[in-house]
Image (cartoon, each protein chain N blue to C red):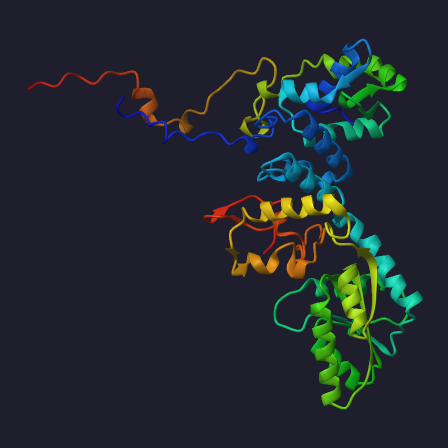
Length: 130
Length: 302
């Protein structure tokens, strides 16, 4: 299965953390303001992969339950599922990067690409005499 | 502070433009409605992206339940299903109706200048018959007037194809027109109508006019052929109340002519990526509320 989305991960986390292995989807909706469409969309791939089952429990509503295989799968991949430490937003986009310099290679800025105004920016203008 | 933009000048980021932001429901849904809509989404996955439009104009639980019930029974044809369905449709024409390319021309029901879904079906039928021997591009026509010329050239059978038969009025008029054109030229041909989807009442009307018709999928009226007794009365009044919120006119059409779908067809059908028939309940596609207020619809119709 591909890497679960944030909503799918939340469904798995809350189902796993609950001692019954079940999750009332209405609670997830109420706590996170996720629409019924977002939740049904997130449940479908997990259900198709045999990780969860979804049933309409009377007096409760749509409820997710981890299957025994699903529970094993969550334990097996818990690091990838819940301990994500990547920070893709902290890296600059590739298009903004120039050629990378080699180890011990001095950094030589291309001064011709700088405007002359840059060198004058710290110099105060002489006082005007009236 | 001078030089600072006022609050109205500050451009606000739009949630949908940022893929990293998970959109949130603007409110907490009632438990019962959440349950019904969740179940509906599992049946009709195409509605998952249209959640807020589902019950946008419903005043009470009856109206919400009616909309959800109608959508639950909606015959939505996914674009990905079309090639397979067209294959079945074409196989039916050849194997059951025994049409052969020597004597038959397959024509769209269209007879005017404007593009029509029947031409799309005629084009798809051509692709679906590609592996059948004998069929060439000249057997597939885009207008009924072209069919008259084919009969002049010796074709004896005309298969008129269309996407959807709603009230049956369009089919009866079109076949009547074709017969008239052929009679004016002292020509004769066996005319058969074949559609992907048809309403029971519309099919009955076409058959009543003595026209042979075949539909791949037959639908009943969404309300009056589904509910009975008190449920029927309640559903009709709920739909009337919902239609009462729509503008009397939109896109040069009068709501009075489209109430419960054109000719009261009460259709629940849509081919993904197409233009929904006007036979569908207008609550699903009418673009304006009273006071000419634009609304987001579940289906987009020209």
